[in-house]
Amino acid sequence: MAVTPPTVVSGIEDDVDETARKAELAGGTVIIAPMDVMPAGRMAIFMDTTGAVIAVRQPGQHLGAQLVNEPGAFVWSELTSSDPASSKAFYSAFLAGAGAAR
Image (cartoon, rainbow, N blue to C red; front, top):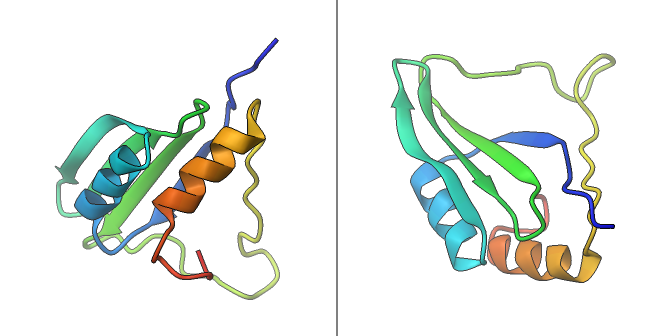
């Protein structure tokens, strides 16, 4: 029995409109189209081809987490997939050209 990944992964992007477009081109589904979140910035939420939900944010006045590379900072995000081949195809297409540090 396939199980939809329950985790929402959140990330910071320079351009949420472009990120949502890339998700759709890779076969994903935009759940919440890019929108302004008052002065905090912009956001969008989409789903990959296996059901994992990804929220992306483009900072405005609210920059998000500032602690990096120090004890207590966020260090890990993991995707569990019911269909690793589909996930690999989606993220390979989605992240193409985005650089290896993504």
